[in-house]
Figure 1 (cartoon, one colour):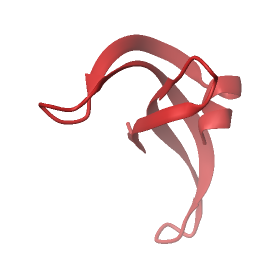
Figure 2: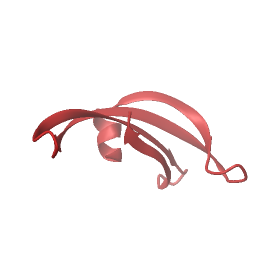
Figure 3: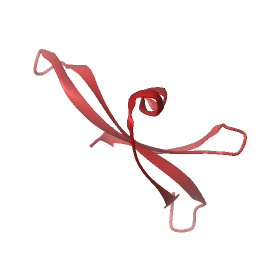
Figure 4: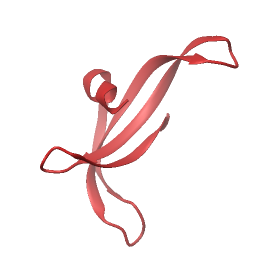
Length: 71
């Protein structure tokens, strides 16, 4: 989903995020991603909008996936 957010999603903003009150801070980018998904209870595909927030370190490795949920 992260790859989809980066290639097909819409950039929302950048913000500082902290995991816990005493945890490390990370510079995160957030994206919104809309995609069709099969919804079992509805018995059909419906559009789902996700909010994805993450941080990447200097080496390009994913440090932290802060949030990935339906918007």
